[in-house]
Length: 230
Image (cartoon, rainbow, N blue to C red):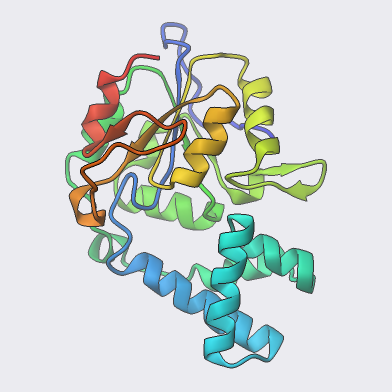
């Protein structure tokens, strides 16, 4: 895995690094985008493996629960071409209309004082198109998408332990924070010494109790990230 910068940090940029998830972290994806992606994945599995819709949906969920990404199960058990799968299951348009982005997110993203890396299990084309449509792209120093999360020619997306070890070794700093809406990703990163913040906006079902396990920081709004020193 290699982090490729499209915006080089200037000499005065603090060495702290923010690893920022995309869907349901920088924008609300649950209303339309994620259900549509799930529908496209189910249809892909149905067609490729000759399954019924209920069978395909169950398999999609099973692989996501077991491996952290449906794609990994399809590669491991069915030899699916990952690039074909990603291209066929992320066909979306009119992002500003279908995403529940808050207008303040670009401004708040720009105010994060450090290196800002988009860190997503989504494919690169989808992530770049969405970020550009929502006015976020220019505020990232780099984008690490699922295609970039390959180590020794093996796909290792979040929450892979291999991934977090590789990230720490490559970025060469202890000042790392992952901001994500998925507790499994955060707990895995935390085990490798990466600071974490669980973002759970009220629209996603915010729970009053603190999370258990290694994840201790939780935020409701993106701007609260800046309050957590690391």
